[in-house]
Length: 197
Image (cartoon, one colour):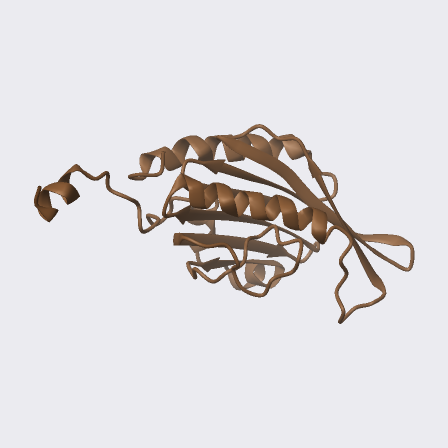
C-alpha cells in the first residue's frame, strides 16, 4: 500500500481552530469603545504553551502533552470579575484523557497550595461532579486573606474525543449548572472539527 493511499484512508485531524468557533469569540473580537475598554476587556491567545485555565499547581506553561491547537479567551471587568473559555485539541482521545487525568491528580496534590509571593493568601481547591462530553469534572477554588473570602473561581473541564473544553467564572454567585450547559453545547460543536470525535 502506498503512503498516499494510507494518508487518504486516514481520518483528517483538526490542527487549527476556526475563527469565531468559541462561544465568547465574536464578542471578544469586537473593538470596544474607550468607555467600555476602561471597564472590561478580552484577551485571545492561540499559544500552545498557555496553561490550562484550571491550574491547581499554578504552572506558568502548559504541562500536558500532545496538543495540536489551542484557543484561550479571558474576560476581565472592573467589578472585579472575570471568566474564561478554553479549547485545546490533542493528537488523540488518549492524549486528551491523559491531560484530564493529570488535572484530576493535580487538584488533589495542590488542593491547598498557596502562592509563595503572597503568603497571607490561602487557596483551597475543590472538585464536584459534572456531566458533559465523554468525561468531565467540576473544579474551582476559593482564596482567603486574613480569615475572609477574597475570591471564588468556579469551573468545569470536559473532554469530548480529542478535545478538552474549559469554562471558568469568578462570579461567586454563579450556578455551576450554567457552565455545564455551555460545556455540553461546545462538546457537541467540537464534533464539527475533523478527527475530534
